[in-house]
Amino acid sequence: MSQSYVIVGDGIAGASAAETLREEEPDADITIITDEGEPLYNRILIKEFAKGKLPEAPISIHDESWYDDRDVDLELNTLVTDIDPEGHTITAHDGTEYDYDKLLLAIGGTPTQLPVENSDAEGIHHFWTFQDARDIKEHIEGADNSVVIGAGLLGIDLAAITAAQEVEGKYLMRGKAWWRYALSEEGAEIIHEALRERNVEPVFDSGVDHFEVDDDDRVTTAVDPNGDRYDADFVGIAIGLNFNTEILGGTDIEYDNGIYTDEFMRTNHDDIFAAGDITEFHDLILGDRAQNGAWGSAKEQGTIAAKNMVDYGSEEFRWVSSYSITHFDFPFLSFGHPTLGDDHVEAKYSDTEWRRLAIKDGKIVGGVLIGDLSPQTKYKKLMREQVDVSGQKEILVKQDFQLDDLEGAAAEQ
Image 1 (cartoon, rainbow, N blue to C red):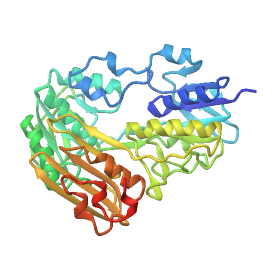
Image 2 (image 1 turned 45 degrees about the vertical axis):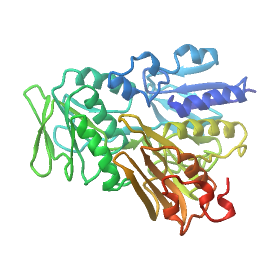
Image 3 (image 1 turned 30 degrees about the vertical axis):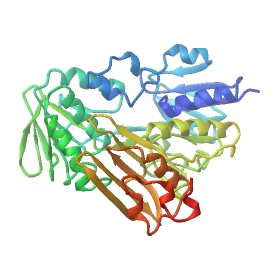
Image 4 (image 1 turned 135 degrees about the vertical axis):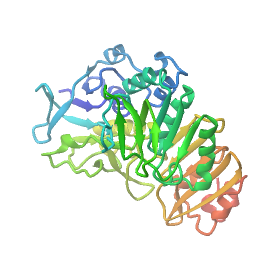
C-alpha cells in the first residue's frame, strides 16, 4: 500500500519536500495544502518586483502544471485549522479532512502587527507575500512621502523599495543603529549613509506611538513616542513574524516560538515533521535549539525532512545559512547566527568595507560582511567544523585572512 504524505505550506520548504518525496517514493500519494492563492514563488525576489526592477514572471517558480506533472495534489486557498495526531488527520477551514501517514508542517509565520492606534489604516503595509508586494508596488508608485518601521532585514527591504521608487522616506528605528543586535554603530553607519544617499533618512531612538488618518481612514502621519511627527501617505511595517503555531493548540506537539524538531526535522510525534522558519530545530553546530528562516536553510530543511519521512535517520540537517542584501553599491551578507554569541570581533577597512564575527564558547557562530564577501567560505568552514579560535580573534579579521593564519591543525584547509 502506498504511503500518504501531506504537506501544509507551499513555500520553499514545503515545495522542496514534495519534490524530494516524489523522487524517493514514486508511488506515494502527496498533497500540498496552502492558504495562499498561488503556487510557489521566489520570496527573495518579490522586493525587486516592488522596487520596479523585475516584472512578475520571473518571481513565479512553479505553475500548477508543475504539480500535475509530478502527480502532487495542490490545494490552494485552504487554511488548516486543526491537527489530530492520534487520528492522523488534519482539518481545513471548510471542514474537509485529509488523512496522512506522514505529515510535514511548513506553515511559516504571519507579520507581527504594530499594537498602536490606526495601525490598520489604509496605506499601511506589511511585507511578506507576493500579494503584499503587488499592493506595495501599486501604492508606492503614487506616494509622496513614506515612513518605514522595523530595523531589520525585512525593514530595510521596505526602505529600499521607497528609495527605488524615488519616494522621500523616514526610517524610524528604536535604537541607535540598523539591526543593532548584529551590527555595531560603526558597521551600521555604512548602511545609514547608503540610505541617506537614496533620500531615506534614518531616525534613531524613535518608533511609532500612533498614526493619524484622514476622513477616509487613510494614513497621513506617523507620530513617534517623542511627539515628533512624520508625514506619510505610505507606511511599511516589518517588526517580525508571529509563527503560525495556533493550529497546534489542543495537540501535544511540542513548540514554543516555533515547532521543536530534532536534527532529522522530526517532532515529538514519529509521523509529524516540520521545516522552514516555523522550526526550532536541534542545531548540531550550535549544540542548541535554533530558528532560521533564510531561503537556503528552509529549502534544505524541506529536503532533509522529506528524506527522513521516508527513512528516518537517513540524513541530518547541518547547515550554515546565508542572507544577502543587494540594495546598495556594495554587497552585504550575514551568515549563521550573527545575533548570538558571548563575544565578538569586528574591523572596518574603508567607508564601505567592514566585518564582524559572533563567537560563542570560542567558536564562530555567525557574522556579517560588508563590502568584501570573499572570506565567507573560510568563516563558514570554521563554523561548520566548530574550530576553536580562542585567543585568535584579531587574526580572524585581518583584511586578507587565510585559514592557515590560525594556529592548530584543526584549522588547516
